[in-house]
Amino acid sequence: MESQEARKKKLGYDNEIKTFLKDRISLLEEENEPVVLHNDFQWTNLIVKDSPNKIQINGIIDFDDWRVGVRAQDFVKMEFYTLKPINNIDIRESFYNGYKKNCNIRQDFFKKLDIYSLLWFLKNYNSLYGNLANLEGSNSYKERNKLLISYFKEIERIIDS
Image (cartoon, rainbow, N blue to C red; front, side, top):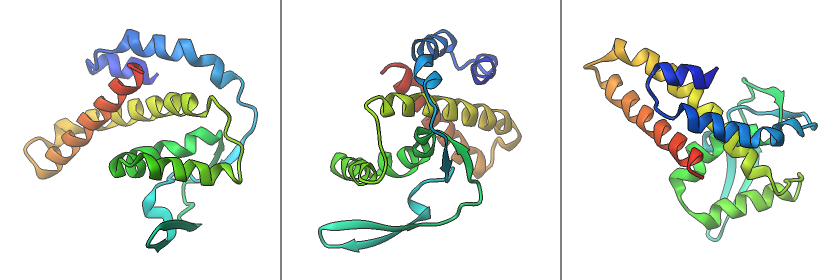
């Protein structure tokens, strides 16, 4: 459905998106471990202890949008809103290494993360694109257009990977 909506809005990557998903659908078919998802897992919902050489996550707050799903889904927003802007491979690796101490992350985890990220970006791109025309000329329009462009770049990055 996200792919059909993107085509209507001239995203221009319909075939690439279909191929990307078709080539990776088997990764989703093997998901059989449902987990409770926070569904808004990002830095604003983390309680951390910041020391000179260490950042320790002490808690997670704001479970208003929780649901049951698969593990990789919960990291889409963490990647986009937190780890990508920090742009520090050591912090990213430390984050996932800390997570691995308590939960099993299989080798294909990051491939699954790309699939769920693509679907999330398509959904948000479509939603934002549909509302953008109503805001033309406003400051909100500029901010949302900037976000729309960042979603588009992430879609390109994922399908080119």
